[in-house]
Image (tube, rainbow, N blue to C red; front, side, top):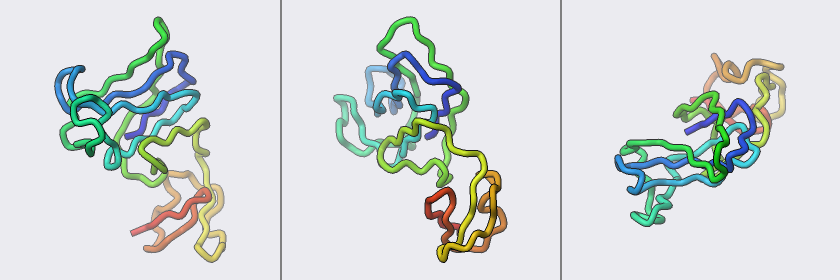
Length: 145
């Protein structure tokens, strides 16, 4: 799950994902967003944080409700976009990966041997029409099937 904010939040906010229809039910709560503009949560690795099922694997197939909670009153959270993806651009390094700056829109694509294959291409089109293999995009290894 990816949440993109249009500006830094000041509400001391975090995200709750519920597998029940009640806000008192089983849920996963993220860490506080801090200064991050992009929040990535790996639902396959998430664990319940509520008293009910605490520590057990989160059931991503039963998501019923998503809420944002802030601990500072009368502050707003500006959500630009929120979506589910398995795109490696948003691959978290843990249960939650908070990135304090937005990702560059253009990237270079290299072969594993270091040969520059594409220069300054749009991130969304970096792997378009590449043959199957492993590439280095924005400093990260990416598998193309």
